[in-house]
Length: 151
Image (tube, rainbow, N blue to C red; front, side):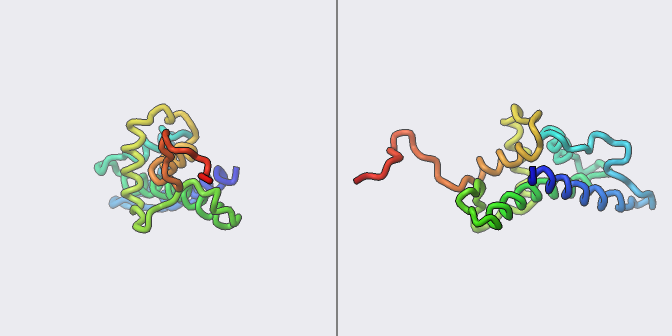
């Protein structure tokens, strides 16, 4: 539940920032203003935003919304497991050289192309699935290896 609330707060902040952005003509554009295609409910909704093309007038705002949402989901998980002192519950472990926000967005979009069965699930769930598969905390156990300690 906290994940959904934090994600919602991140999205609201980004949408507010996008609404304040002006175009070259001096018009104020709004990512949400009459555009339900920018609502994020499912992973598929998020993927449509993250795949906005450079020639779209809302490209910068869409990339900010996508990157902010993805970062917010990951940051919430990392902070929540760190603050609770329960780092063992951490399900995502980034490498020492963290991917950039843009690299993570591109990788998420690529991952989604072969995992579209999750596109109707909540966006935050899909983002976490991606991060858990891309950056697992424990090396996968081989099928032939015993999980019990010897001795």
